[in-house]
Image (cartoon, rainbow, N blue to C red; front, side):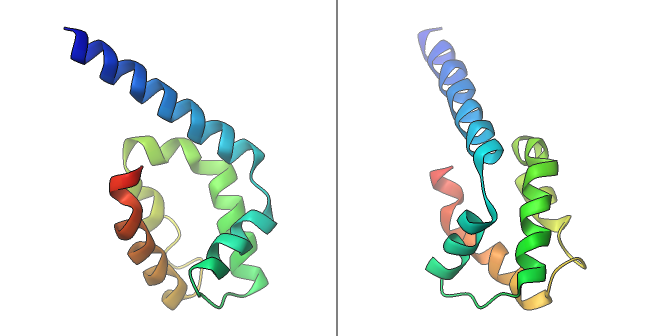
Length: 94
């Protein structure tokens, strides 16, 4: 029972952290993260990703891949696949 309680509290804390981060996120944060992963990206794609995060961050909790797939067709295909690779790299840390 203690482990379930701990996981529940941990999940709530993680969700709260991500929500707070998404609410305070700036376009510059998105740009800096993308650049830190050596991705060349247009301002238009930065804007699209930023708006997507701000509008749909709650979807991330239910299905992270669905959240990312929502970007397909709205950003450059190369950028989309690089985002999938970044997710794969970091998914165990989320």
